[in-house]
Image (cartoon, rainbow, N blue to C red):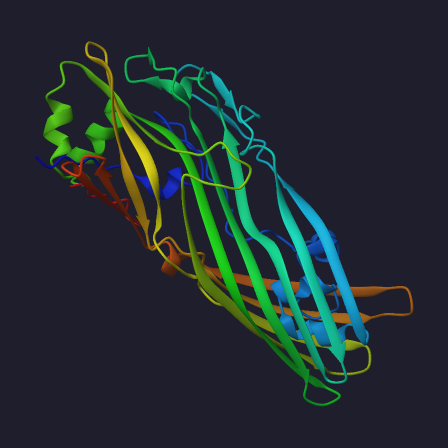
Length: 361
């Protein structure tokens, strides 16, 4: 017998949701990489920000002095979120309830070497991520009808980049650069959907699959909970490796003025896979858990275009600015999720798109 269930994972990977509450964070790319770029609000396309420049515009490595540089740092990532239930006025706050989602540490490590017109670099950086942790006792853990479940609502998304970068000074004005990145992405998720949410999805044609009549056959269904989490500093409930990269250039308009452009490509990640538990919450039958394997298909980080300029006013002052375009629509148009029970007999597939269409079989 096949069983399936479907919901909206697209927003859930960014923040835990329940009832009418929703919190979404832009988490796929940090504002800046390294202390200089971060302090400048993410600007890094047209001036020397050190070894971390390989994460925005590899061509800036040729703006560094001759010789080598070692970069070591750490990002502390956390979400300070409060969600209010409009019906009751209750507030759920994201705090530290476990050891890996709020806050957590992400590495910065890089080495560069410049000799003549050529600069080379290798590094390991957290490209993006966020963690939310609402615990087990807030209204987010309450199923339809006010039934307390004691189930967690939380999330963590972390993307790590390992770039291999090169930059070449073509002449005294033009420099070009590129990087090829190994990319790792991991996701933890604990999410409760109320029966009203499931019913709304089914009614609008966004849910299908053989688990739908199974859940409908329970005496008093109040919700369904998804759990795919590993409580470890880096390991995640589902994860995958892939590749990415970027290319860029800088152009010295004058001795003091530099223009820059860079394009970071959309990632090419394998499907994220791992173990998960789907728990049906029923007021009469209690909590019915189904363990299995889950696959999040084609979950990619979006491409990004950066344009920047810098101008050296004098020996002490420089002004710099970047403009960025992130191509969300293409990367996040469709999200597909598949679930297979441990006995191999129960299978579920789910699809979320920008129109919030979902499918489970």
